[in-house]
Length: 440
Image (cartoon, rainbow, N blue to C red; front, side):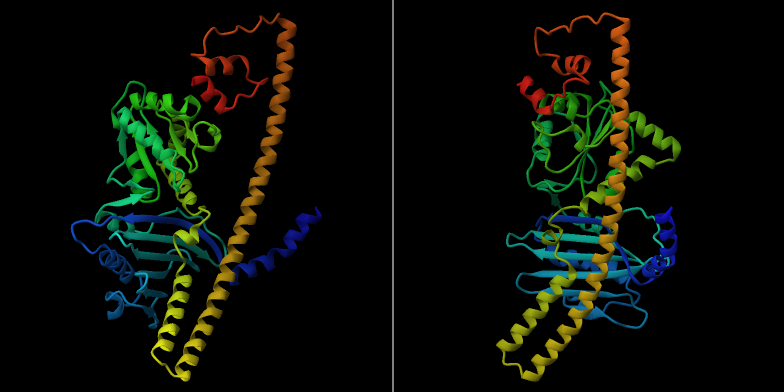
């Protein structure tokens, strides 16, 4: 009662804090390698695609220097915060746009973009979307900035070393399955792999349990999506085992770091067709929205986000240091240097205040998620304890009613997994690596 009363007393203070502090939620992140092709300048073309997108949202027309790929900052009255920084060595272009939400007051969508020219002619491209909210938090659907699709249409692109297709790829043959397992087990894979399976005996891609192409269009560039024919599902089962495979219209998401010989099935979420149907009966497209939101949320949980896509503020600091270096090199006056230092100091103070606000918001979200996870874990422990006690009670009743026959020992290991599930569940826990060892 005391804790509840204290919370009620602090509610007005919490509301005031929300008015001045942003609740920052990373929404999605995409990092791609754009392949050189046909002599096109993918670095310039990619920047042009992004600038056209920014021009529609900035509130004012972008200045001429922006279309030349140079550094600019839009500060006109009525304009939204829009800026870009260009570096010559390495050839790098970074931009940021703060887009005010048109339907939710005091909510802003922050888009950060990085484009880097590689020495082999490829272009490294990344974008990060962040939601910053002041005041009461409102739910939202996770998305990817619209210009990503235009960039993917402009030429070939790779994600985790895998060439992206216009639609979800169908896995049919043993060679396809071999390549799929290689992707699943790549140690440097950083994004999810989602497999949609077909009914037993089917190769008709229209028989998936959920609209796979709708999912792919919404997460293209952020994850891999494949459709497995029935034959391919059996081949995949032979490679990774039944516990880690997917078949009969189920949908499975394989997280980065997948290792078929040691992994636990629960780490790679499995959606059974009955669950998908039940969700969609409650609300059309419910499963698609859930899968898209979960997948995009995973893209912002990568440990080395800053290394993969440096923030706009980081790049701007590098550009300022380069500007001071050039000014000294070409004999700039002390007054010019002092002016640059003053400008940098003022900018740094603003960025520090902004970063503190963002990190405070991120910490608030992390604390909330940790508390929720702790509550869920405690609830599951209680449920598991009650179920174990219930099972023990039932086993004792069965032993009293019937004389339990001896456990049959199989003559071969051909159906080892089924035998374990039938006779050992509740007494012996069999790890996936044991199944793999028996299979080998």
